[in-house]
Length: 196
Image (cartoon, rainbow, N blue to C red; front, side):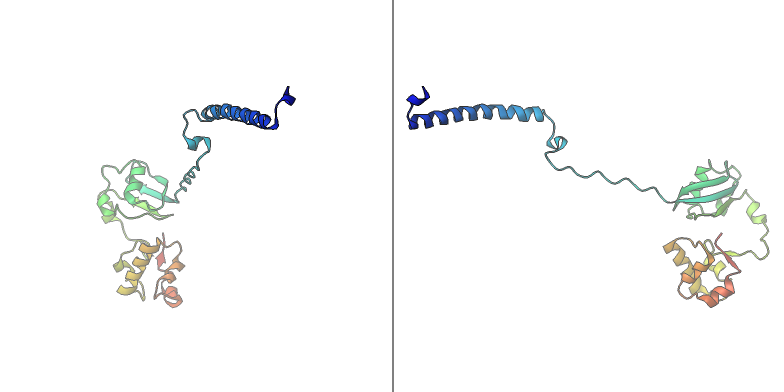
């Protein structure tokens, strides 16, 4: 039967079969796509690029502080760096009723390794100053710093600016990082200063 057709007729028949197959495949193609994507966004099936997941937040740097005195729960506390005295007191359950919170700067930033004493009312004024008490270069006012040899108003202000900009000193030798304080001045004040 196939041999009864001319070459021209055979070509036309082949084209007709191809057209029919093409139509069948064309109708089937949307059905295939719809089974792959039954109403889901293109991002979910990987057809579009997805935005990367945000990086996890790093854990904050922590400091350790010893709280004593007129608070509900004195003890050792671990707080995020940059915490302030009032946050330490809150972590300890608050101050006692007879706490003298006016004798301490509640907004002062804390530093690692320090001890904070919340006095009872009247206690701070009657506390005798220990003989030969060292000047805490992390807490001292300009006036207190100026009691040190070779530390005048200018150098005292530079020490305060340095600790405000770079954070508290962790070792007394770091005071030599302050402009205008070298080994000679350090040798004169090293036995008179502390960072705690």
